[in-house]
Every structure is written in structure tokens, then in C-alpha cells.
Amino acid sequence: MATQISEFDEFHAELRSVAGDLLAKDKTVDWAVLADAGWTGLEVPEHLGGAGATFAEVAVICEEMGRAVSVNSFLGSAVLAVGAVNALQPSEARDRLLADIASGASRVAVAFEPLEFVPDAEGADRILMIEGDVVIERAVTVTPQPVLDETRRLAVVTAAGEVTHVHRFAGDPQAQVHRLRDRAAVAVACDSLGVAEAMLAATVGYAKVRRQFDRPIGSFQAVKHACADMQVTVAVSRQLVSAAVQAIGANQPDAATAAAMAKAYAGSAAVDIAGKAMQLHGGIGYTWESGIHVYLKRAALNRSLFGSPTVHRQRLAQRYRARS
Image 1 (cartoon, rainbow, N blue to C red):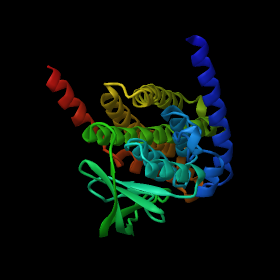
Image 2: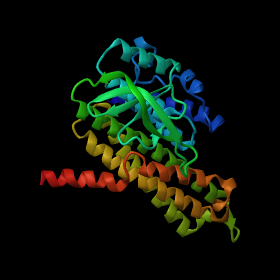
Image 3: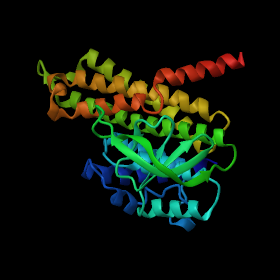
Image 4: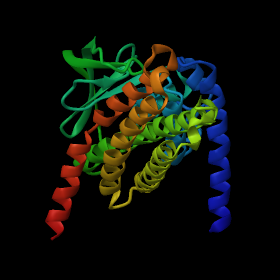
């Protein structure tokens, strides 16, 4: 068992390194580039042109997306879309859709109810609308929804025509929808973890070189304690996010609880750490050139996307009250 874990850790470290290098080259990554890297089909079966990987590998990419505050369609068109299509009953149409996503031939978005703030719906070739117990395709109107975070592309999706195709879930539809929502929440939590780790690294690096009173500010006790608090918060976030990723990937009975804990904590933590990073950078942290504001805005949107900390804590409270 130890050897197996070591092999996966090594593979994930290599994947993280490759992703980091690619995303560092340009903040905006085209869909074609994501497809060429094989990321659009990570969870697509190999016989359909995908990598046959798991949600654990998707989580690695999500984290690196947050670390780089990358602008792309990975969340809506790869993570959510592939998850939704994999949850459908096997059919020729489903397999063709998965193959098209993996190859980059088709960019697909997923709209939950209500249909506001749908990630990466703008410019999508097809939009899957989850309505009740089915997933439908129909003519829609997509209206871009400006948000504070300019690294995300959200839109309002409204029905504009007759249904052209109806897909049915494999297994219990309600359970599948809940799992898709939990999966989306964990993907965003991974992104938030990447944001937090990037801000911690930037702050520690700055504290080593910025000097006051002829000393690096990192030698001051107040700065040391602040960075230590940030490190502890990141460590807790990683534990919760890792547990949630494992629970979602293995479809464990407690996956919803793990997802709620990870999303609630990591979402708030990223905002707090980005705000502290801005403060510890001093005056330069508040300038446009520093770039910290980009991370803070992304963290703020992540905090509310697919459930705010308050919403997820309420879910946890209801679950624990039901058990008592």
C-alpha cells in the first residue's frame, strides 16, 4: 500500500510541475491548449480518447489553476461537463460527447437550477441543462454576467427554444445531482487552495527581501507570526481539501460532508490569506502592479461559487443535528 501511495504522489508531483510550467507562460489559456495538454479528457475513458484518470488528477490541475489565477474554460467545460456526462446512462450520444470534449472538438457547459452564474457558458458549443431528474439540450440564450473577478467567465442561461435532446442519469437522479454539486464545490475549493498557497509563497518571499530599519521585515516578530498563521491555515485547508477529493473520487458515503467542510474552510481561508498578503506587502500590495488584487478577487468569487461558507456550514449543522 505504501508503494502505491508513493507512486501516485510522484505522478501528481510531476503533473503539478508540468501544469505549473504551462500556466506560468500565459495567464489566458485557450481551450485548444488545454486539449493538447490532455486536461480536457482526464476523466474520459481511454477508448474514447481520454486519459482514463480520476478526480484526484483533475484536482491537481484545479489547484494549479488557482495558483496561477489562470483564465480558461477548464472548470465549466472540462471538470463540470465531464462529470455530468459521465453521470449519464451509457449511450452512443454520451460516448460521442465525451470523445468530443476530450479531443477539444466541443466545449460544453453545465447549467444547474437556477441558471444564473453558469461557468464558461459564453462561447460553449453545447450547454447541458440539469432540470429535475434529466439533463436536456435545447436552444438557449447566454448573457455574460460581469463579476468582480475578471479571471472567471460566468453567464446567465435562459431557455430560448424547444428541447432537442434528453439525457437520463445512471442510477438515482437526485443522488447524481447532489454529487455533481459536491464535485463542483470541491473543484473550487482546490482552486482556493492554490490561491492561498500562491499568496503565502509570495508573502514569505517578499518578507525575505523587503528591508526596514536595515533588517528584512521577515525578521520582525509580528511578520513571523502572521506568516506562521497563514502557513497553519493553508495546512488545514490542504488536509480538508485532500480528504474531500478522495471522498468524491471514491464516491464515499461521507463525500457530501467532506465537500462541505473543504469548501467552507478553504473558501474563507483563501480570502483571509490574500487579504493578509496584501497587508504584509505594505503600500505596494495595494497597487495594480503587484497583482495581489487579482488573487483577492478570485478568492472572493470562489468563496461564494457553488455555495458560500455559510451555506455549507448550515448543511453540516443540519447533518449533525439529524444524527443527534
